[in-house]
Length: 250
Image 1 (cartoon, helix red, strand yellow):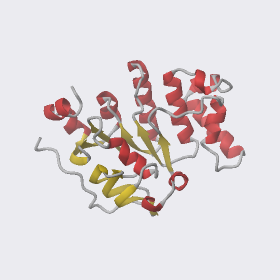
Image 2: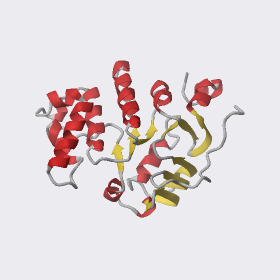
Image 3: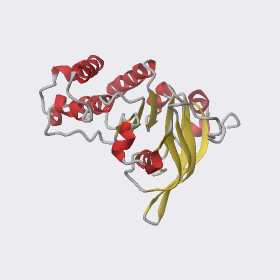
C-alpha cells in the first residue's frame, strides 16, 4: 500500500473549495471522529469510505450542524462552517442529500422540489431551475403531482438529489446515495452524479457501494475508528487488495 498517503490539506484552498482540518466529533462522551483532515477542490469529487461505525456520516452531519462539532475547522471558500447553522451552510452553496432520503411523503413531488428553493421567490429563475431538474430526472416530471411517499426507492433518491439541486449548490454532499437501491438504479445514480460533475459541481459522498464510489470519485479517504488512515486516488484504492478486503468487503 505504498502508493497511498495520509490525507493532507496543506495546499491553499481555492475560492470555493471545502477544507476540513483536524475535525473531532463527539456524541456525549464518545468520540466518533478524531482529528480528520481532507479537502474537496473546486469541481472535484471526494468519497469517504470505511466500515460501518467508522465515523463517515458523522463528518457530513458535523458540516451541517446536525451533531456537535467539538474541535477543528470546516470552511467552504470564505465561509466558516464551524460557526454556521444548517440553513447558513445551504446559503453558502452546499446541498445535502441525507441518508435515507428524508423526503416529505405527504407532499407532492413538485412540492418537495420547491422546498429546496425555499429561500428564493417563485419567479422565472425558480421555474427555470425546476425545468432543469425535470430534464435531469424525466421520471420526476411525469410524477410531479403524485405524493412523494408513493414513489419507488429509486425515484425517492432522485427526488432527494433534485431537491438538493434546487438551491443551485456548487457543492453537493451525499450520504449513502445507493442505500437500498437495486443495481440498475445504482447505475442511474452514478450516471446522474457523473453528469453533475460536467457542470462544475463538486461532490462529497459517503458510500458503501464500491462500484459507485470508484465510478464517481477522484479521491477516496479511508476512515477507521474515526480516523483518516489512508487517502489516494480512486484508481490506487481500487487496485489495492488490502483496501478492497478490509474496507470494502470485496
